[in-house]
Length: 196
Image 1 (cartoon, rainbow, N blue to C red):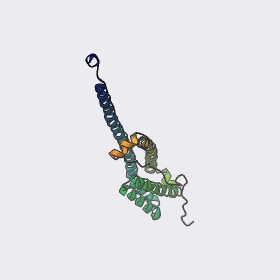
Image 2 (cartoon, rainbow, N blue to C red; image 1 turned 45 degrees about the horizontal axis):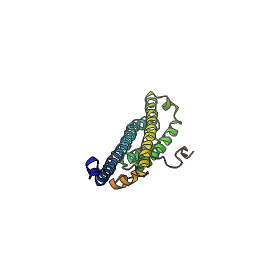
Image 3 (tube, rainbow, N blue to C red; image 1 turned 180 degrees about the horizontal axis):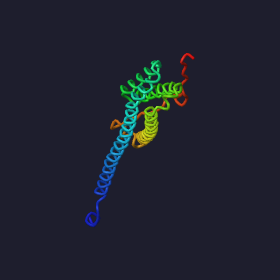
Image 4 (cartoon, one colour; image 1 turned 90 degrees about the vertical axis):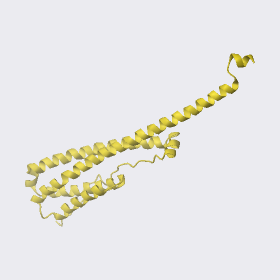
């Protein structure tokens, strides 16, 4: 009886311990969930940056094509390829579709730039030079945005796959995010044959 009056009973200590463990699990779950949401939103924000830069480049392309058309009107196949690739990028929905369409647009732009090599007067045109400078700046921004996005995806994916976070990620429906990847061989310039 003295034990109960002077201190806590074993039952009360056990109850407090159980409540403390439950509270730790609940607050841990809240913290994990909030952390996953934060990382997912970082991925979404970085993806929006890529889309902004892709749109910026897409907006520059018609002016570039029109400038080149003035000098190289008979190069319709290349102009069509650029326009088609631009339309495909605009219609792409998923990360994989955007990456594929972006790769096609890069290839079409490479062919366009090869055509420009045949027209020295075009390379001296101030409008063309300004557009190429804008395009080069945009390409750099796309590269940075892609790097930042892939970094955010890596952080998020690591978090969703590590224990014990993987349990909460699966429970709350956090799925693996896709990387924005260049297709195999994208580092090699395309071979273009104009029937020469």
